[in-house]
Image 1 (cartoon, rainbow, N blue to C red):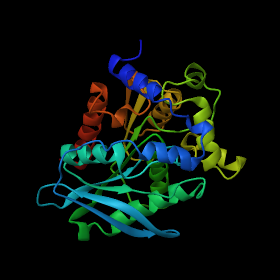
Image 2 (image 1 turned 90 degrees about the vertical axis):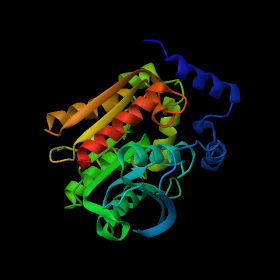
Image 3 (image 1 turned 45 degrees about the horizontal axis):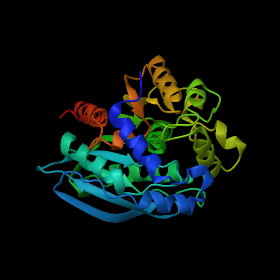
Image 4 (image 1 turned 180 degrees about the vertical axis):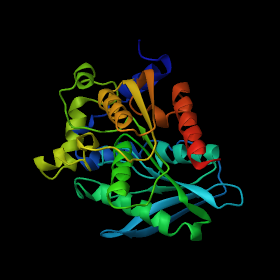
Length: 309
């Protein structure tokens, strides 16, 4: 089907701005552009706290969102997108997490993991896993429930959600009740069909994804590491139930579809939601794209089900 009219408005607006794509920028230049975007409003929650927690090589900044209610609250650990190179706790990610907290009634920990190329693979993955372990070990002090932890993320954050689920299984915990991946980066095969169809976007291009991967990986061996490219994992059994969200007009579309299929074949309870006419990034655009709001509600409902709420 054609590009959704609401998504087309976003694409047209981005083209009007005329900003250089990632692959024609330095990391600092592209971060400056992304970070200058206006803050997207999100619902109020009972409390929001910025703090740091211990990480593998120093403290990790996090933002903790607490819902209304007496608790103990289930926990969502959220990983922002941005190709492992850009992204913060603000922008559309703050509003996305606020919405999930409000709709699912969970406490959320949004993780400001180390970025590439200053910190290449596996820095982001190890930070996100460390934050998930910290959530489990410190749940009582947060008025939260260590037995009900889920992970979620979009784009590179979706990659990190999948990776953390693998690490939790492979390293003996913590046990997750759910993993949510919105248009996740799952592979680095730039020859697949959706990379061919959507090489020039809209929004995300093949050249930009190559730029992101080249900044993230240390060497060619990392391309085959399942903690960088989860589709390379030989065994996906025993992972937390999953929600995989994909977008038709996205070069990452086919790898998300393939990962959902692999999860199902491995016996992992999996829901795959494929959104016609949608662009990369729509999950964090629910304030202007109806299907983005629908996907956000779908994620919240999946969390409520997994949390037993």
